[in-house]
Amino acid sequence: MNKAQFIAYLAPQFGDSKKEAARAVEVVFDAIVRNISKGEDVMINDFGKFKKVDRPARKGRNPFTGETIQIKASKKVRFLAAKGLKDVISGAKKLGAAPVAPAKAAPAKATKASKPAKAKKVSRVKKAAKKAKPAKKAKKRR
Image (cartoon, rainbow, N blue to C red; front, side, top):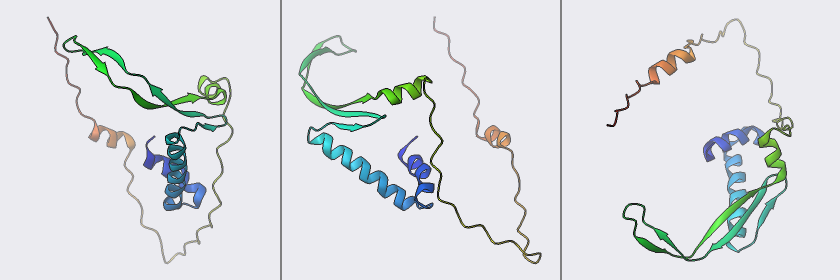
């Protein structure tokens, strides 16, 4: 799931407003980034912990030449999954029901005079067949 898909998933919780969902996602990400950059840990219960880690300088090898190189010291972000998340991923714990979106107003009933146009049905199989490309054969190495 990428950021746009995440926002689309959250939009029903914000009255189908992708703009409000995007704003909420931006605020959450901004809060996480700002606190990690200060050196503070960000702990979200039953999800995990984001943590800033200082990596010291070290020696490594260039994989192409085999030459020894010096790798500079750096700062990285580490994510440690919480027990609750690990339990859900492993199947030991079931997720609760997904949050319910606010109810929408019922659409007005159509009158006989205004019949909706019939939508053309195209099966998913046909769409997938059009998009599918033939697989390339692997060359044998000798």
